[in-house]
Length: 453
Image 1 (cartoon, rainbow, N blue to C red):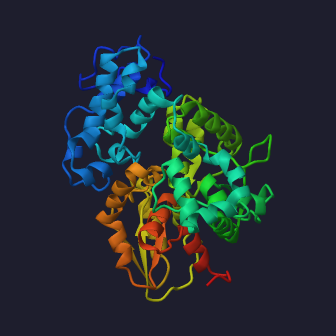
Image 2: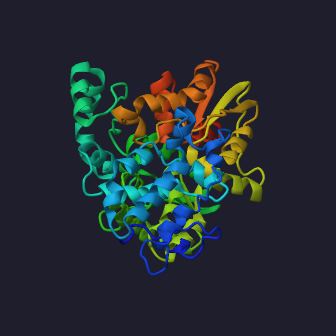
Image 3: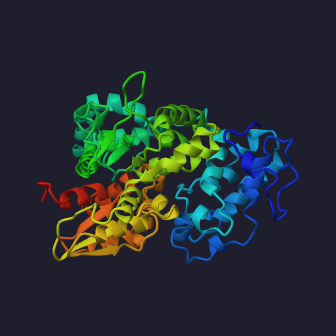
């Protein structure tokens, strides 16, 4: 079966000799098999002392939910039916992959960097891309459907506050009863900021990538980032689709549901729009970890061409961009004091996996008078759509109850909670009733020369 993703980088790269016989360059599954075979049996993921890996295994304690078992299940499917995708529809493989939430902890913490999340994406695409449920199609298509959902935002809000309507909607979509349906903002960030660029540019140019979530659901975050960057003297470009003037999408929601071709389409569109900026050396700054870091990770496996390398080199999380600024120009980020205030920080799994979380804590620590406390938690458990799925809701909360939710509940009333991931903020709100802020919002509040308090 021709692979959906580009696995050629793994062909003939198995130094351990564990690759099965199907892993030959003449076979289209050679690279995929070799990538799965990087799991060579050390089983470090079963040790139980890892910081991130693996959230579902940490909670259930069952070896069948470990990255090791998932890699073996994929290898077994390949070996059992080379060239035939039928084995990817087996109950054994479905069960093995069901609780993989794509946290990337394995890629960071496995000695061989086995990326179970990407392996699982390929497997899901082979098994179910043409047979997704109504709910899965809804979650995958959020970037498109949100335009229509905005017209019915009043009814979505009513479904959240009226038990009868809400119960029916959740039953039809198999959404967990405790989860409020996400309501789009009345106007998106791009709706209220129609220009292509803002700011003086005295310090240079930067691209702000307002993802689907910070654009449509939490535009205050994108607005805060824009005001922060322009306040620091940057000219901030807001890229849109060249043909329609509509916001761009990285393709994350499609990829998460195994709809790789749709994800590639979105990725190609974004790549073509951002490449002129990247080739000019203009940084591309993102706010949502799972979206921005996709440009540096999964885009390399989509077969999008050489432009990906340049894009990946210039794609930065906001925290990375600002840390680079203060390293190059000390004093460039003047922050007002916030005396005796505690700030609790929860890191998104992808921030931890890609090593950007330390930059968040460093920037917050630059605010005079604050006490920054990292929450020593693994995955929040929401993981995009995972926590909304009725059959996974309990496990999702169990992940959060390991450390995250107790830490938030026990925080002083005046403490600020910082979480850069939209899923993390949802989980904190659903589980404790407390709101959390994005790094951009905190830094803007404390930026010298602003009227924010």
